[in-house]
Image (cartoon, rainbow over the protein chains, first blue to last red):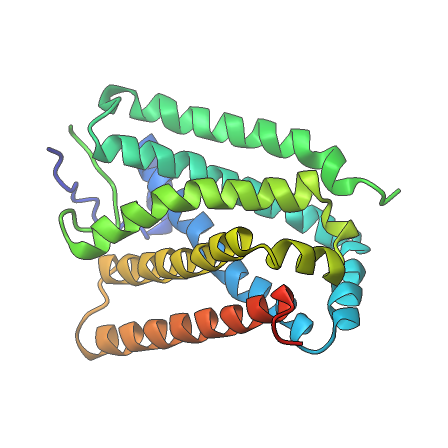
Length: 130
Length: 122
């Protein structure tokens, strides 16, 4: 059984150079989590155009998709979601006591896999823009 | 195990429910992204296509459950992160109330939107 580590004031910016892989994983999980819950509220707000009329819904979504910045934001959102999923699986494994000795490696693997999937998705997300 | 970083206190109900919803959300979020960005491209989405998907009771149920679990998981995560950062006393109770109300409103609006999308109401 693990014990909670007294990490002190990690929110102190000057301490970032002392952070271990586990601490970076924890901070990145929080950061991506804040983005995802913020996006959920935004997502429902945009989809709520469906309550006005079918045309407004279609026009709003297609209007947003015609903007290059939105396509890039979608790639960013995908990267955020993938990291949160992969690191979340890693956290579940840690809670189950699986692979405790490989926590650092699994964090680095999450980062690499996130980058690979996000980069590979670029043609799909930018499709039809140019 | 030497070090363990988490915003959650193990063994609490908030911790258990965060893990249970996480297991469902791993599959639901991946499915949602793949279906609406790789199978159907977001730029091609129309109300008619959305209605075709949402009029299927299985898909509708999955999306509604996705909304509820994502809202809980996200807001529970925010609450535990803030408590972990030292939120206490009256401010803790106010934040809890604001997050619960936000979650209820989000799920209510999302449910309304989902029903409109399904074509049951128009």
